[in-house]
Image (cartoon, rainbow, N blue to C red; front, side, top):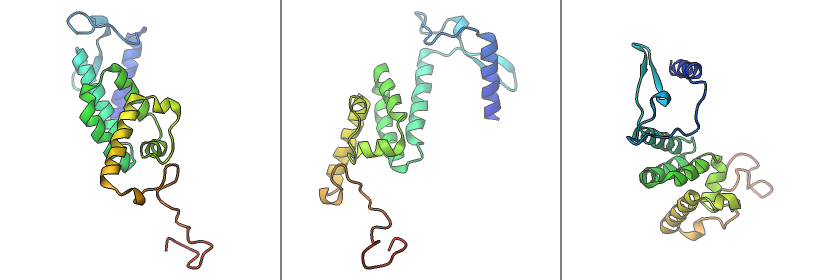
Length: 176
């Protein structure tokens, strides 16, 4: 039902707004000009116009980014990234939010390896201020709560494969 609602809204916006500006300018009152206000579709009342203020747009963006950081499908990242974003998103400016979006667009396994220093991140990622802050938080937590001899050296995986006993005495199958 939600997908149908979204597609009807997009269709309505496409038909009514032939020209869309990338970043509409706000008036001095902080409201969008009448021609650029979003139109929301309601099944009960048909089409209704709603003013969407800059504060409301920012709140929606924060909620979207918070959801993306907490629901990645990779439990470790869900916990680490979600908590960090929840603590810091209110104080972020526009450049930091763009940097956060860049971090959220990274693939889970790569991001986890780079955050935990299992692999060295590319220079473009190292230059991202959000990634740098997040990585320092993760590494500080690792150093505070785990012994260095329980972790692999940088560049080496933490968990060995299931078939590490292969070729030695012992079973040649399973994780035993």
